[in-house]
Length: 129
Image (cartoon, rainbow, N blue to C red; front, side):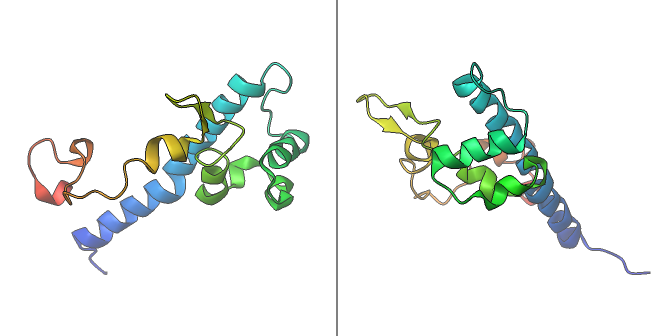
């Protein structure tokens, strides 16, 4: 029997978060954002028609609309949430900005090289960070 070391087990946990949990959160976010912005006309029901409408609004290829958004991985989900012009909001100057432009690009790379406090071990264990 092969014994798995901690590094391999942590990799498996991380992979599960990236491939399963993040897409779940992005799906919930996409549905919530859609319903808030377009829900009076078209509630998000994951139908082919609504998925095509989303692609048309974003000017994207419609290859992703052939399947339920439950099967989309993080790539199209990020494109349709973080980079979506449909969900752009006004910044302090009144310019329309995507979520990426508002919250990700302004931060840039982390110059300190430190992890954000939310991902640092609460009890100081460096292996948990």
